[in-house]
Figure (cartoon, helix red, strand yellow):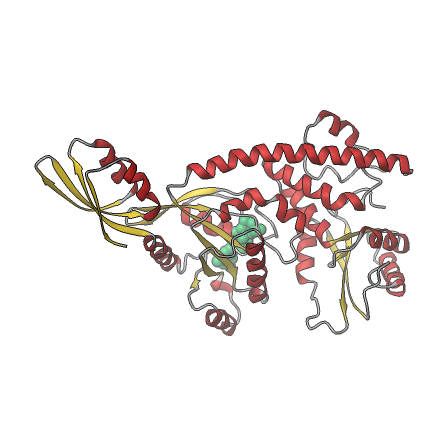
Length: 435
Ligand SMILES: Nc1nc2c(ncn2[C@@H]2O[C@H](COP(=O)(O)OP(=O)(O)OP(=O)(O)O)[C@@H](O)[C@H]2O)c(=O)[nH]1
Ligand SMILES: [Mg+2]
């Protein structure tokens, strides 16, 4: 049944099981968006209140039988669970329902697989798929035979569309060995890309770095485009961006910062994905400021903020400075909702990346953060010392220059981080006017 984990153009029934005493009933809105993002056609929704989680079938045998009926009447090709299922539960359910069953994490991995463009993103997704999906797919791995031997990467998502072969224990054993070999190889390739990436990020250490983070579809890429005059891919679907990009953003007043886009977050982001996207998220870890972009028109905005904070903590950004950016204010239907968010986050800036509303204020807020990191300095340097002067022209905001005899006294605003660099160039005197 699980010959492929693709759901493209397949007729899907969505299931969300929740416990009777659970405070919030799941609404299946996000799962629908995910399924549609993956290309599936949602034909029915099946929220199920259960007394307890069945270890064998999650929803219990009786409910599974009802589900089987609905699959038949809707001619569905796939059943997608909002809950994450164990390999055993999937097997059991597929036996009863006689249709492919996939869980939320597998669905997210499927979307990631179709979106990955760069080599790094493809390898990351493939690794996550091998680690998460493998135990659930023990009959599908014979194709790795040639791949693992060659040590090359298949296109991400190649796990789909592969026919089944031998199902005996011996085949499983071979598959397991091949998969482990493949995982080791992918990790090795990723490590070398990571190293290169870290060097790249390290090389940018002089500039103030800002990273856009937030729930998927919040408008991060749209904002990056409008602020930096770029054309990063934007679309009204979940996980439009998998490959991050960094652009220069001119804040005005000579201030220039680097702005990076990141992959969107989602609640219950599969653990393996967080792990394998670590390098991409490294941009966020190394940032001087995070702009947490929120879709304030979404009824779940507050919940999404909490989910994003959770992921940030997981990747080691728990203590970073964060500015909340309430986006899409042009389409907030109920003014009250925006007010609630503003009360919860009084420092937040309201914007619309589509209409340009609030971008000036956002620039000012960011500039204030950037300046907060600056020192006011009075530097005495020999007139013939070209190196110090060109450094200051490149990296600082020059406020005043005074020439006397062989020297020039320059007053500047300089990022605190650049002070050691300036000291290394050894000017006659550096006086810190204020901190
Ligand atoms: N009305 C309105 N739509 C917006 C605004 N900003 C972004 N959008 C739309 O929201 C959708 C998602 O925008 P993206 O910029 O792709 O969102 P993202 O946060 O980069 O999403 P992922 O890459 O999936 O994480 C697109 O259809 C945008 O046109 C806004 O201020 N107002
Ligand atoms: Mg994006």
